[in-house]
Image (cartoon, rainbow, N blue to C red; front, top):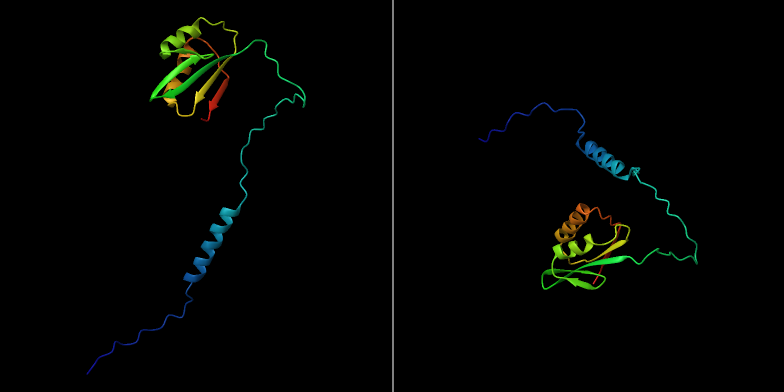
Length: 135
């Protein structure tokens, strides 16, 4: 004959598994919905008015970096230079009070721009204007 196992004593405690699942979901929801205060630096720019124009004391020099045929080409005010070292030599002869803008094609590798910044830093030339050409 077939023998059945003896019945065990039934445990009369409550099963809290479902309650713990719901509490965990509520906890995650509350953690994700709490507003986190972001550290923001406020910048107050001076206003020049609606009709005001900015006048430069002198015409700035524009240093251009373009990528053509997988090679970076350099220029100062549309005067081309064959390599970075010739560009740096030309920049070394500029007056230190001149304003310099750097115009960079977005396809130019960042190594070329960082290298140019390093050379300008060696010459104590400060550049605070960077223009990125989209196309």
